Image (cartoon, rainbow, N blue to C red; front, top):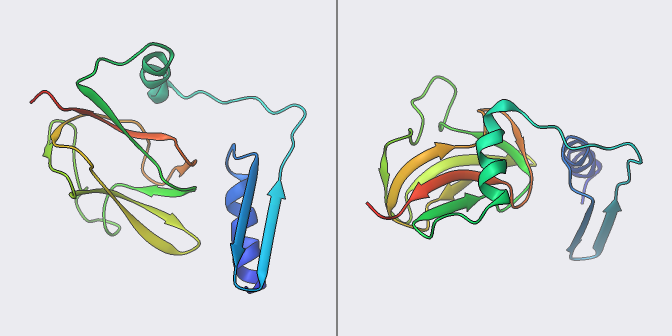
Length: 141
């Protein structure tokens, strides 16, 4: 594992709320734990509806697509290209919804359900955390 990889990993962790990370590859083991005594969650206006929805139980027809990794969220395949999906679009299982870039690898995030995109919960270019909700899909359509 090269030093640049570790630096990039630390940079991504600093911009997130991830508290610990364990990574193991052939011949290399890394464990990072962060602690911020005065750390407070930051809420943005765009996320308020989501946080309210998370505090309550969502109706069973609403499905949340969550980030499977820490990275940078991109709505389109390239700068200037149209977004993969917009609110109101009908998506199918396996359809690419966005990209999460982690350690210079572009990871396509696919829908695991059929339904209508009700809400996109992250801004383009924003850092996302593991398990952070990205899309709200209405599966009743």
